[in-house]
Amino acid sequence: MLRTLGIVVGGIFVGAVAMEVVHKKCPQVLDKFYAKVGELGAGIKEGFKEGYQHVTKSPGATAEA
Image 1 (cartoon, rainbow, N blue to C red):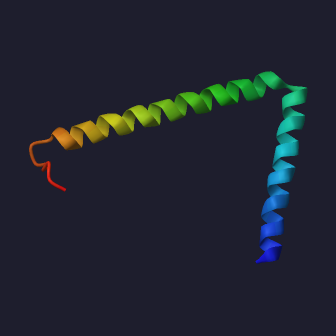
Image 2: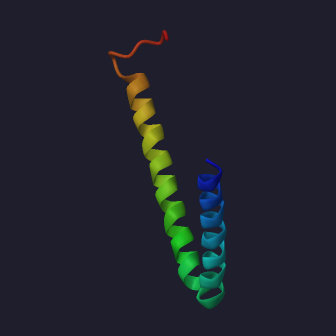
């Protein structure tokens, strides 16, 4: 278990260093990526809210839980 934890922590460290190197060499790529991820997250959130409202307002749904 300790070995697995070491591998995970090492992977996180290597990933963070790699992201910093990529950010230093070409920051516009990561900025575009972050923007796309943000848009995707907002779309998922909006879709969830619409679906939740649709389910709670449907005639078959009960207000009791």
